[in-house]
Length: 480
Ligand SMILES: Cc1ncc(COP(=O)(O)O)c(C=O)c1O
Image 1 (cartoon, protein in one colour):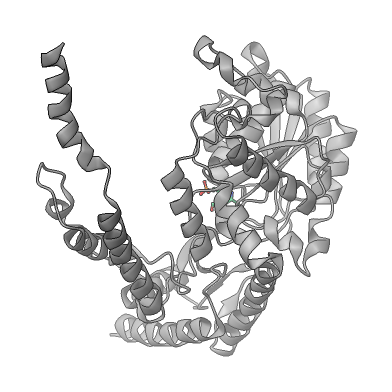
Image 2 (cartoon, rainbow, N blue to C red):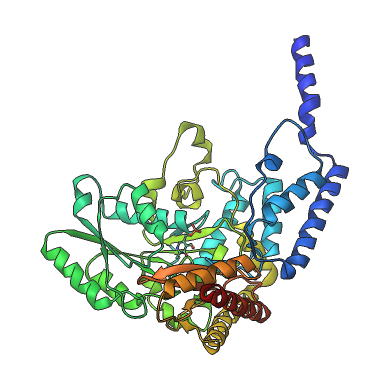
């Protein structure tokens, strides 16, 4: 026994290092806080994009310990100074958000107290906050109180949860799979197809419905196709629409699609990961019908400017979600709540989960919703401003977007795609503002996605002057 105790003490002396003492905690937090504040202050002057080779040796894990200063330096050199500065307002590509500071404080709190947000027995307070955020989202989207939801890691997993519920509600399995039909647009985000593969629906029939000139699902074409499929003895079961497409930022005609879904007894899913929170703005009318969906996805790490790592799904049919996610095990017998819908783990593939609710709840409590809404309205107007200025510079722009994503290109009689590709290269080389590109109907176009809470009119002016220089460089290179 004595030798056992001695051995325990020997290890305790070393393992105790993991519990940092009060003095060192203050010291470390101060260092991190100074770095974080410097970073935020420097942001307006940082390039938004830098193409840089990572020094893998510098980040390699060996048995040597490092000081906090060394660690922060590595973080700065290898993480901050490479790729897109996603916290910058100059991130105007893909789908930005910025990452509000209040959320990072929430993450710090959640990590320090290490709340277990999967089951209410473990942390009733944390689970109550997760569920309060979901209840708030139900009100935002006029979903019924008895709808269920989950705060997942992002839009991809949120879509996966919703599509799995649709699959299980309509019992799409075994020999039914190859006869079952899903209707969607080719503008649907690629995570939808990825989810379908993951959940065993790779072999369903995907009908890409004709789009109108604004890249929205044609209601007539959808109706016709469903009828054709029914006549052929197929099994239509799901329509997927977007409320804010990634490429062009448009909202499908939700209300009419909801009507078609109802008439044909199909599950209606809306991916509002990017655009959903614009329902709080003057664009509310474009979302008419969203409340009629069976399931929706909306990403707080997009339209609420929360740092990466939280998406949300709402589903009306609780039974369908429970079908794929409700499991118990003997080691969980203490943790079964009176209401099985209370536990996030029963509504998602995750058991242990990050306490994501706090990163939304804390900022909402601290800032109130009005500042978020003003920020979204500002982004809509900045999109208009950017487009008008581009037209003045001789660019062509895509159709007037519903929200804050749009695209443009420089018109050329010959080799237009090559010209715009070269222009994109110059824009990336400059990097003062980051834009990304896409292909639409065979045309290479440059995308703007204005959604970072830090994107201001000064950012757009900076982007315009960068584009002007890049355009001159492109002309020079291609005429040389
Ligand atoms: C419309 C839409 N749906 C889904 C996703 C995927 O979300 P995430 O990257 O959070 O997984 C995105 C990402 O940009 C998106 O724009």
